[in-house]
Amino acid sequence: EVQLVESGGGLVQPGGSLRLSCAASGFTAGSYGIRWVRQAPGKGPVWVSTISSGGSYTFYANSVKGRFTISRNDAKNTVYLEMNSLKPDDTGVYYCETDVSGRSTRGQGTQVTVSA
Image 1 (cartoon, rainbow, N blue to C red):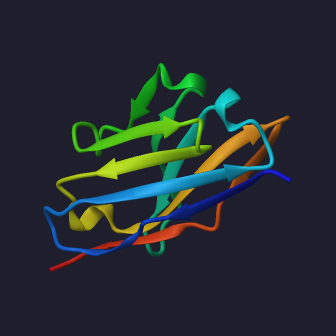
Image 2 (cartoon, rainbow, N blue to C red):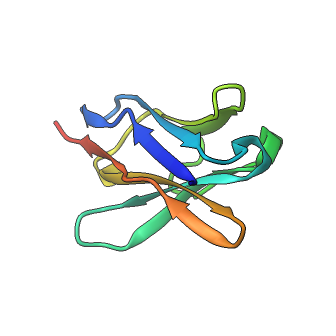
Image 3 (cartoon, rainbow, N blue to C red):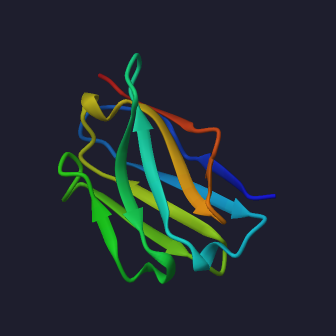
């Protein structure tokens, strides 16, 4: 069974940093691209970043470009999202997702709250 488990969220002040982790199991994670999306309270999910299989290509939403860095360690079946210079607008539940055999899988999410 394909599973994704996020961790690393928390409460941080504006300007602070967090590193999120997405632990993958049940499939060969290194062979698949993985993305992060976030959902602010009362709003729909918004794409944040994607990393290709193997990690050669990374993509970012304009709102996080230059502040967030996505990476992966396939030996640990884990994808990371390093978030710096956090803003209150970055608040939300962060999910990692992947598409395996035509089916999308999303983890349970991790809450990020940016507030003074």
